[in-house]
Length: 123
Image (cartoon, rainbow, N blue to C red; front, side):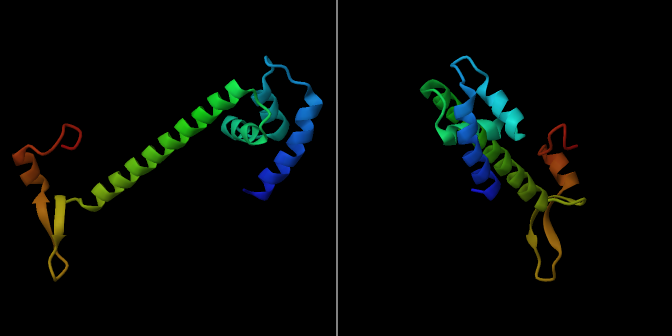
C-alpha cells in the first residue's frame, strides 16, 4: 500500500466520524470530493475502512472484483493479440518458424486467402 493511501486512510477515519453520514448519504461522492480520488479508489478505500453498511460493503466489493477480472481479461486478450501479431508480417499470414539462416517460413497472405483462412476484416 502506498504511503499516500496510508495517510489518506488515516485522515479519512477521522473525517468519516465527523460527518454523521446516514444510510441514504452519498458517502462515495463525498469521499471522492474530499480526497480527490476516482470512484473505484473511493469505494476500495471505504471498504478498507469498514465504515459502510454490510450490504453496501458487499456490493462495492463485488463491483471491485468484477472490475479487476475485466481488467485481467482485457490484459490477457491484449497479450494474445500481441502474440498473434508476432507471428505475422507484411509477407506472411502466419510465421511457423525461422530457418537456421534466419529466414521466416510459413503461410503467406496469398496462400491464406486461397485457403479461406482470412476473415473479412483481415483481407
